[in-house]
Length: 268
Image (spheres, rainbow, N blue to C red):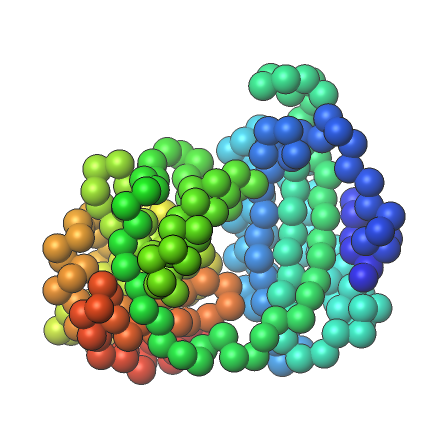
């Protein structure tokens, strides 16, 4: 499999990460997951904007050098050279170069772009979800970005397997609904659609952003809220969103829910 490492294509077996790599040692990096489908890189501009904002927030130098045309060329070349067809998942990772302990010696970065096939059945099979009791998220000026430190989501993913759910709802340290293990969450009650505020500690998802934009032009009222478990249990419908699309929820803690069919129209 070919990768793009600092804008040069190499075989995956030739990628060498030193022992003092800051991404490995400190999780000192960010990433974006993007979907390529029907000859189109979905929401590339929005993903790069969030990535560069995150890099600047974390003190990386040179974020403006990540140009849309350059990234697009690298992605399309990788897809072609790896002979991928159909739906493709793209991952862009950036992390600070080696040097220093908690205080880095420099703020330059490495960038890695990888591609792989994405299953076409993402939308199938509505989910059974519950609440995580082990993981609490925390709001900060950095919590909106996708960082290399995924431990809360890893622990929650292990918990969901043990509980027999397809996903878990994560709350913050004050008990407010934030998101799920790899998705933003929306729920419907009457003619209103709710999603957690960024101040809950959730990721500022690109799909979340697009759906909110479409809702603002529709007959539905969208509200970004700080609500606790009780409000979510009162929902008529729940759906989850991330770069791959929309997933419908059929039950929350074994409480049956209606499928909100319009969710996929909002995402498209």
